[in-house]
Image (cartoon, rainbow, N blue to C red; front, side):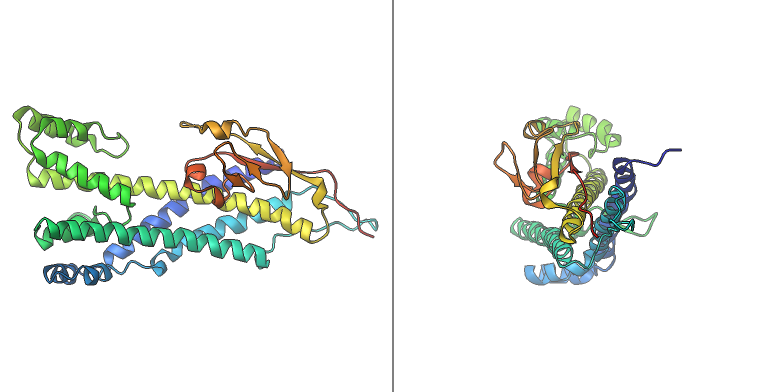
Length: 346
């Protein structure tokens, strides 16, 4: 059997690691939920202590350390594969030129530290902001503190004994979707309930559609228990969607960055001449292609150059974090590197 190409090796690595990273995110969220003392949260809400209620959730960077570990693994593994796959060259003496990926390289350490911080800090800050908004809104409505608390942290599943649902782990936008879905189901307004039925099949649990249509026909809101069950399932599915998106986006990004770093280290070592390395944007179509990425297909720049995208972004490689989520979330583009020759060493 022929040896897998570099692309095949990296594809296999991605397929293996992204589900692990997605699971690391979901397990971090589950761990946060498991440590919540509901009574403390309710007591602080009853006292009108929003900040104290927020602190009772213990959402901090340390909770997402498994996610940082998963990103480190993608970065390290990708770099090792790329370095090992570089063309075999020999010195004038006949000795093999050895190139290894160095995770302790200051540039590699700096990239990983910065990206890990951006990723986790962004998750934590967005979480705290969306939850604080939900707590304030619940208080402003005069909602029962217990109801507000359960809408935030979810309810215990009697079958598993674990807390499910809630907006812990969801983005601010997803938390808004949850609030709107709940309002639609409780409204008794056929038009609003029709909006609920128009929500994505990937996140809406269609098992509740029959009950929603019956409520629309009767012009009545759904029973509270049915609403809670439907919204909990909606929240669970959105959490899975977010975990999968993080897993795919960050695994792609970690591998892409390590690929770039592997060539940078080879150049830094003096075993590869920088002016002999070029990189090419490789566009892969997907379900929702970005037109400005299609325009980048087969564009080449020098190794030290930047890709200038039609949207104004400047990126060192596909999935460069500087491109932001608008360029990286769900993107399948990659960067190919080409070396004309290795510099021989006496």
